[in-house]
Image (tube, rainbow, N blue to C red; front, side, top):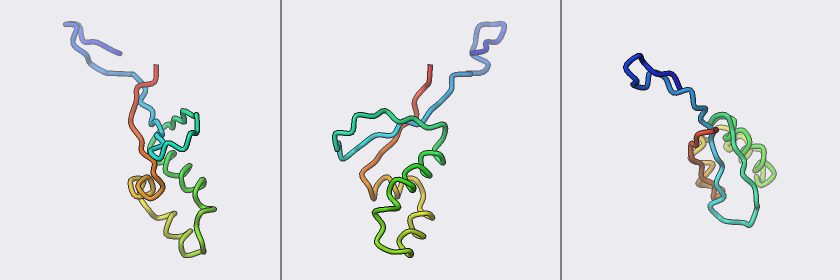
Length: 83
């Protein structure tokens, strides 16, 4: 963190990460973190491509925003501070 001469916060250099949350609580014991939401989105697409029944479904999955993918496959995420 960088502070002004008067002690007020000028710039917070704490790195933010995105933590993947298993809403369905499948028992996976992992703590996946990602640099940004797009990295998480690409990870979930790769993870769930095999769940798609045909090429049209695969193309649709690749165009969905992160929130829709999370909802479809019982995931969630939150922004955390990496120390």
